Figure 1 (cartoon, one colour):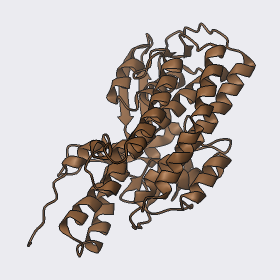
Figure 2 (figure 1 turned 180 degrees about the vertical axis):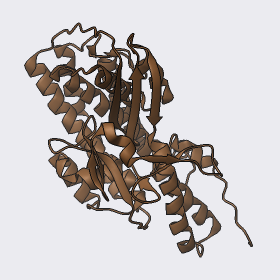
Figure 3 (figure 1 turned 90 degrees about the vertical axis):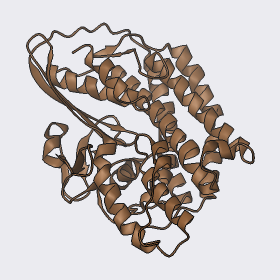
Figure 4 (figure 1 turned 135 degrees about the horizontal axis):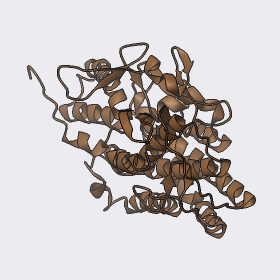
Length: 379
């Protein structure tokens, strides 16, 4: 049980923090252990850092080139170099925060079952807080930049699933909320999430109350708008994002809104940790048989890890449900709704609109959809 989180981290290099955290939460649930407030705050800070770096990677380097019709971020460098550099500055800072708390930029090594093996020092948190505050002008320019872009028009109401919590914008913890059918506890996740196979794919698909649902930034925004930081709400209004929003393309805008939220929440968490003082925790749990579920929001949507342990702490069963797999059926339904309405457009515009819709979900990994082949029949 001590090793599994470092193995599941490798499921995704972009969402390594979330996989590590979710796996640890499942183990702790199986062992009946509640971590300290300090440990939870450090985990939340680390998750915020991952959300920022992942969202910025997606909106700047994988979706912004679509609006300039240049194919990739390299096509933006000549005429829009400052935009690219701004994205790099923000992502670099977020990666550095991952390293400060997690021990390195990718695949964190300080997270362990029960606590952290090494805590950041208060003086380092204070210095990093100053870095975040100094970078705020880049966040403001990010908002202005995305306000200047014209998001494609599209609307298809669907079911939205995310974690939810009355006390905060739920990224680390909460019940599972469906916009259709209400809430269940994470331990009952299979009452909400139904995986199934389709003949045309080797990937599992998922459904809940309908034949598909959406997870990710837009789902979280629709389900948890009230818990957003006030500045994030201001940015949402400035960018024209209103709850509820049924335009999948606006998922990218929701990611910008969440980036602002995570910046502000990171400052709050650092203030708390510095004020409280850091305590070195040496916690070694006694293995025992148990069964636990961990649910956490990854940048791309809700992530579930389930583990069963035997009496010596060996993993005897594991089940993981990944955000992109949950979105696959909804992507297909979106495309079925979109394509008939754009057939009168030029061929290149049709291809771009289809690719942008798939990329809006931030699938693992968005650049893969640059390889999409669109077949035109009876042309």
